[in-house]
Image (cartoon, rainbow, N blue to C red; front, top):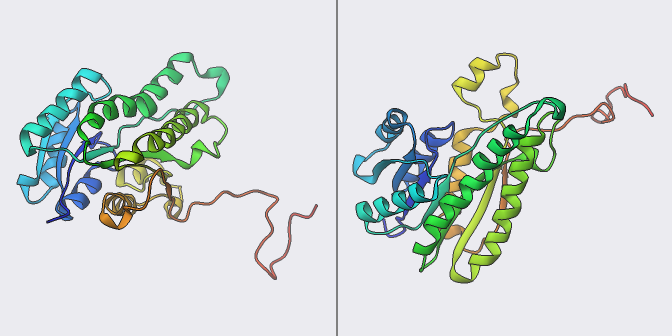
Length: 251
């Protein structure tokens, strides 16, 4: 327990929240889970064992005042805070001509500005170092058609987090981004029965990487963008088959 830390986890009611919370708690970390939906928040907190390692606060941490309140309640509950695990995010798909400006604003609010708000609340408390973890998407660097608003907001998040990492590393604060693709959850499988989920990201794989990034084993890492993509791959009709296979697409 000497490496036990206290983290504010924002957006834990999403696809990754339960697995991330239980994994971090299993490593001895104490958590304050902050989200807007009180019912789902309690469901996630109930997964964590032992129960005294977790607390909840109903708050929209994309709002600066509520983010600061979540930090204050973390300090009141555990007497310290060692970092932020930011799981807040949103998704949109649609061609440019049919995507109104409000959709872009929603994506930047959910995927980038929410991270700024939560970080600005936590960062002043990290006088003795700490950890800031954000989730991004492989589409930030290789976007599909129709994913412009979502991909642009995630690309902005990664650029901002890289800049932040340079700002804070001198004071021992580690800022990292975990890059993933679609999460392999029961809900996602039910919605997309024909998708090959071998190409999706396992929530436990992301949780294990986050657990590593906040551990002493990662003390030498600053500003990393860590891909956790499972067996995801891009494909093209120009790609050759394996050695010895018939080449169907010849130039």
